[in-house]
Amino acid sequence: MFHVIEPPDHSFYSALINPFLKGLQDYPRLYNSFQRLHDATFLLVEDEPGIVYGGAMLLKQRTSVSHLVFRKSLLNFFPLEKEVFIGTVFLRLDKNISQEKFGDITKRFYRALYEDLVALSVKEDVKFFCLILTSAEQATTKIMGGWDYLFEYREEKSSNDLSYTILSLNGKKEAPLLYKKGRSLL
Image 1 (cartoon, rainbow, N blue to C red):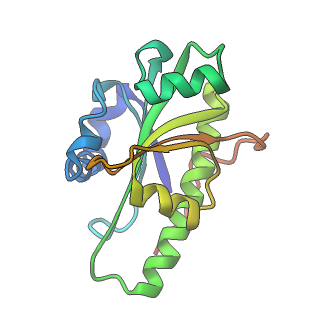
Image 2: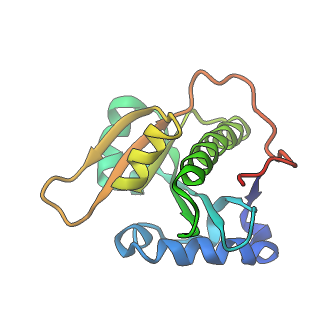
């Protein structure tokens, strides 16, 4: 369902990466939270073109240059970590999808994405990812995907509408298949 796209392969997957980045640009504060996009690892869905697109984008950073909210949290939770993956998640569905299908697709998308994030964490030997999400995306990942966050922060009285989270990947000892052909969201 998801393609793991690492920096050397970006040019081969521009048809998946470009709509993802264009969708993120609808949220300028979120989009501008990330630099060096050419160094990002993407987990992107390839399903029915124009109906479902999205996934995750992750960038490896030194903890010393991460967002202030993460630096403070990492000192409390993971004081020995020198590098972390910071990223975001994005899902966009065609507006003509029925409400019933919307709920089903959303639930399967977030659960499958979590499985593939766990697989990537095994490969990269990490136990968590720092995510900057829109508040709506953060709520949907928890409700529809059952994601478990170690840390959640949202600035009060801010037009920011961003949530800073640390996604727990513990408890998953085995990596599921990264590429599960034949699984479709529709």
